[in-house]
Image (cartoon, rainbow, N blue to C red; front, side):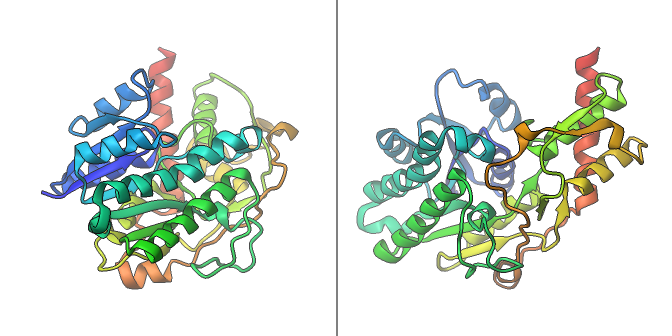
Length: 327
């Protein structure tokens, strides 16, 4: 039985990845931060067969313990402080978790396995935010990185550290440069989920308006359930490498609003949406669009869920959840 260890099990991708690995017969372990983590009940309810270990990406000792206890064949490092807007207010914490946490996890594997560190296959969750002030469109694995937020800078550090450990120690280490991927499990602080919740509440008469920042920012949005399949496929390759994972199509925040409001029968959403300077980023990224040719040709991966299907799925989920909460 193949054994996997996941960090970031309380985020959006962690449960999807755990479900995928369990369906393939894996023995799945995960690191969870703090004994009273408020998301612990969610994890236990969603993926009850996952074996949990207490640990923290900023504490290498706890990571070594988790690796020793789980004896993994594959390690998926999804853990990070991933809310970009928050990173400007908390750059040091973001750097320690999202950047240095990658180094801690790599070292925990190296200290555990020693000369056989290449036996443990490692996945790093890199991000399209690393491209920042984009130097070419679409962005591919060779595109110059120019991050525009403390979060993006931290991801660049983890990305290059993964490459360095692959080259220095012969580790089977891969980075997935994932473009924006969403789902009904996305946190409510992220713009797509913020929109889907608000649209559901407007439909149910629970609120009237929604305040957003830049409506013209464009992103390459896919479905998280599709993207974890790409993570797994990377670690099945004979050698570690870096892959862009994306749909290759961009949409604006206005496009998200169009689809979301259309789902509840509203064609003109202008009276429900306001722009608030508080939600404008100090240095925004205008357009991200990925070229996933390498992932398609090497991994045989393609996205299955389209943009409109994704937004409809999220709104429908929040209509159900908000209806229950309103009772």
